[in-house]
Amino acid sequence: MNEDNKMTDKKVIETEITMGTVHSAAIEPYRVRLFVEDEIVRDAEITVGINHRGIERIMEGLPVEKANSLTEKICGICSNSHIWNSVLVAEKAIGIDVPERAQYIRVIMEELERLHSHMLYLAHGSEVLGHETFAMRFFYIRETVMELLRMIGGNRVQYGVSIIGGVRPRCELDEMRILKIREGMDIIEEKILEFADRFVSDPMIMARITGVGVLTQKQAIKLAATGPTLRSTGVETDLRREMESYDPFEFDVITQDDGDVKSNLLVRVLEIPEAIKIIRQALDNLPGGKITNRSWEMQDAPITKSYIEVPRGKLYHSYSLEDGRVRNCIIRTPSITNIGAMQYAAVGHHITDAQLAIVQCDPCFTCTDRAIQIIKI
Amino acid sequence: MSLKSYSRARAIHVMLVYTGGCNGCDIEIVNCIFSPKYDAEQYKVFLTWNPREADVLVVTGPVTKHNEKPLIEIYNAIPEPKAVIAAGACALMGGVYKNIHGDIPSEEIAGPVDKIIPVDAKVPGCAVRPEDILSGVVAALPLLLNAK
Image: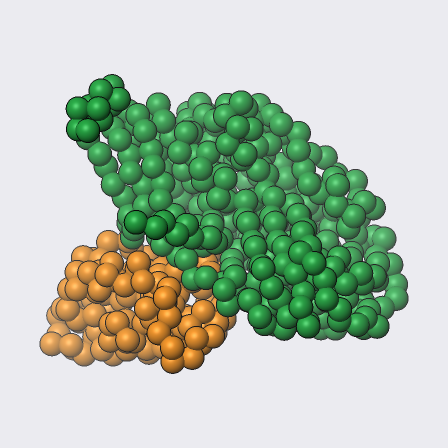
């Protein structure tokens, strides 16, 4: 048996560098094993599952309104995406009409969230690069978005805007709020273009990120990478094009060709003006009327699915309804396939670039730990 | 105030340990030290990822079973005197992840934090506000500075 194993292992790589579960280079707990030969990474293995808290198990059997607000606690960065998608599943299953004004407010919140998520990515990326000044600058403009989110939702992180049939009454956008959002968008647009210009024209940064952590288009498609990670390899894909809520808005899908850290950064930087464009269109054409449709009745429904585009890619929620309670809940977040793809992006590069190659996909390990595999021994 | 306390008051190093929460508190704490709006660095509070140079340990999250042992090891690696701050609803009492089980032992969650390591200051909130984090650090400071 042992001899068979030796036959199949053509080359034994001896040096192994392990990081995690808690490590100074990685903020979130996860485990990376890098197999190194002459300081070049030959193989990488990322282990997730440390954060598993079993939120689907907790959601099982809860009333659907409670279960929806629980999905927010999956992720503190894209919390609005989770609650929005979860509410969409219930609306689709029961067949509830959502007022147009509520749909516009949801889109505005989602795009604000995309802004703060992408800025966080840029700040985190700059920190991993070792450029703390840029990290502070991106945190500085991100604060504008956080203030807007607090103004609308009442909380800086988990704002719970969507409810079944519309949005919470607190999140109504009056004249004052619309004015403040417009002011915030002006500030962000001015600053982000200035910072992006400085970022791209800095030869040291460009030398550090060009050609590092390359994921080819073929690999990305094969490994089912989603969202900006897939777009950075030149595939023009955006689920927002197919979503009903985004029908009234015009925006461009940003793609880059190289699939390296530079492309990943640029895709996110260039998506920020697009998000601002969508928010401005939504504010210009904000329809009047009610924001909540309360005339619906709970009924049983079979398993219903919903996909939406969130800052990191494609998010999937599905559950069925029994006596107003959630059953068979499944959640799949975009980071799981993106992190899997990053195992290949790190290979072939210097060991100092491994961390950069892994964080280029904007990994969110707390989202990722959704399912566990039970192995019978 | 001894010489050690005098110098320690001018360089307080905060270490953040993330034990399986939702990222919300985590980013707010980094935000409160890094972002120019809150900028705790102007009060000589610095963020570090090395337990051996840390004075204050900030723990977020409900402590999943996998994170229990690393958390104890990190706590033991911090030199005396030290202060521990549990930040956020999950770290205080397990949040939505723990309370759903009541007193039934959970399969995933080992926390809350004060079951595992002694906690000196508790900061509530879901997610914690950056202002509250600063107040929490200030509340724990007498422990550090009055130590002999």
